[in-house]
Image 1 (cartoon, each protein chain N blue to C red):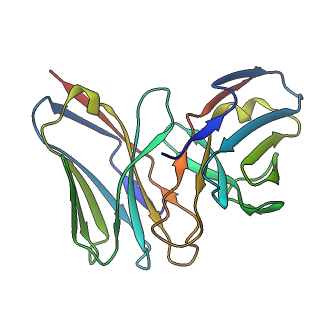
Image 2: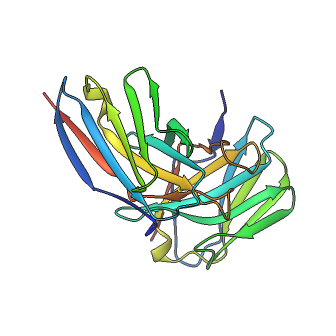
Image 3: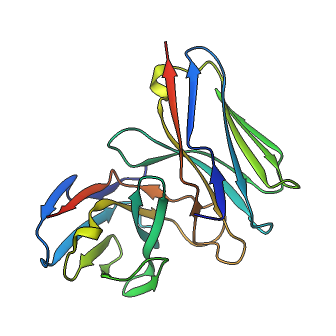
Amino acid sequence: GEDVEQSLFLSVREGDSSVINCTYTDSSSTYLYWYKQEPGAGLQLLTYIFSNMDMKQDQRLTVLLNKKDKHLSLRIADTQTGDSAIYFCAETPGSNDYKLSFGAGTTVTVRA
Amino acid sequence: DVKVTQSSRYLVKRTGEKVFLECVQDMDHENMFWYRQDPGLGLRLIYFSYDVKMKEKGDIPEGYSVSREKKERFSLILESASTNQTSMYLCASSRTTGGGQPQHFGDGTRLSIL
C-alpha cells in the first residue's frame, strides 16, 4: 500500500535488538498494527496501538508511535532465530475503519 | 482463540476454470475479508463482507466475486481463472467495524493457475 511504507529487509544478530520502522500518511489513523508472517503461513497479530498512545510494551515487544511524524516502530528485544519472518505494519484509516492499509512488509533475518 | 480456516493450502488450476476458495471462522465475527498477497506489494483487499449476503468491493475486485450465505463462511470465486491470478490468497475476519477490532487471518491458499 502506498499509504504505509516500510523498509524491505533487516538483518540482525541473534541476541541483539531489532527495530522495524514504518511511516504512514493518514493523519486520521486510529489504530496501528503489527503482524508477523512466518514462511508458508498466514498473518499473526503481534500487537496494536491506539493513536492516542505513545508506547506499548508486551514482553519482548515495544511499539513506539510518533503521531506528529506519522512514524511507528516495533522493537524486538533479545532477537531469536524464531523471530525470522516478514513483519507487516498496518493502519486503520479514520475514514474507513473496517479497512486495513498494509505496508509491503519487512523481511527480518536473524543470523547466528 | 480465533480460528480462521481456509479449505486448501495449495491449489493448482487451469486457465479458464471456475475456482472456489473457501474460508470459515468460528468466532461469530461479523466481518470477513479476502486479500491477495504478492511479493513487494503487501496485502491488497479484494472484497469485504460485513454481514450475511452483504459485500463491498475492495481495491482489486476485477476478475473476482464473493459469496456469504452463512455468517461463518466466506467464499472467493474466480469466474474464469487467468495466469495473473496466481498468488497467495488470505482470508481474515474481525468482530465488528470500529477501531481496535483486529483482523485475524487464516493460513492462506497458494493458488497456481497454469
